[in-house]
Length: 566
Image 1 (cartoon, rainbow, N blue to C red):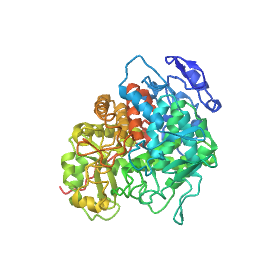
Image 2: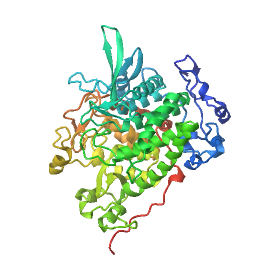
Image 3: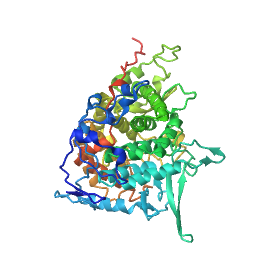
């Protein structure tokens, strides 16, 4: 039996029929929605882009559309919204004895909660009392995402709803860096609660990049917000939050920034260095894979959440067009496997005209030596960046794993990425999962690219450091690609160290053997990442919150380059 916050009792094994699902009117659910256990035969999330193309009848967009117009997928059959994990937490007991770290992690996660006027609105970045706080006492949008998933999986959606609404409120603020006004749709990188003991009042203070290192606005915050809104809707079965006029406007403002027309000749987003998780100078300026993958996933989530009114329909049409172009571009030009690597190695250069095969005029001599040994016979990945005369061949974890979850990667490409992880386990996982990027910048290259950054020395922090938070992403992609044994192996590695090391932010060294030299202890997203990984491995139906199935309409016919001399 499961007791919910509203006092209702429900047996976890009780299931609704498909007919009952069709009769649900989610818009009339209470303020605190009652989680439902439903056996989903299909999902409105799986509508093909062909159904969303320009000119399609609005009735096809209905959330109660006929099941025959939807695509059934394996994980929607498993998924049951609001189902609480059977892991031992402060709110739920199970007969199976859990790992002792689980209860410890939940206790630490709850200690990190931030309250605003009596309501939980997020979790602070770290609880390390032994070092200067800097901005680790703030609630970061990207950092809160794994915490939000943990609470959703545990049947506690209220804090996630509060976070979504508070950050939405902050979006409406006027944002200036020096004398320049930022776009209206920019989401904050972080916020904190200021207590005034004299007036006995609390206020929120947001950072939109004006206080960040390098003064760079967070491009990824808006994407994480949209993806979280979809995860909340999927988990609770409650669409009333996403349907609120404020949330609809918030999505449209974010999309306006991303879909605006300019001088770009590519469908990818042009970004500055330090605009995402890698928030320092690391040579990711241009078209970084992390941003492109998050952009793609946010577009697909927005497509499912936008209402079919006049304003929403305009954005839906633009999203459909952009998704087709973006998926083709990424799958064609960012993808690298053994054959494509050999093709680039044999490229001709200085090709002119629309028939050029080496479209970015990449010099074969720019291929780094390490990539030839790193690339396995069976395997591949999306490289870090593609722009004129430049390819960044580094492997970035977050971008590749989000590409799998969003189905930016085809099933074949997803399998190849996982083959690479297995083949290069020592390099990418080592003794602590998992490398944020590979390989590290060293010597002259490190000096030029990072500007002598003392925090991003080789195999440290964002320069080849190992980040436990990425464990939840590894587990998610393992679940989606049918390789849970990889996730189990990684979780066992993490369990051998994380608690004893006081939940560090990151680890240093080629194998991730050493606690990071500037790593904060009791890092909240390290804690949350572990909990999400454990719950997702135990109950794969949780994957539905963060996974989108492939849309066949977007699958391009990828032709390998023939730019070589025979």
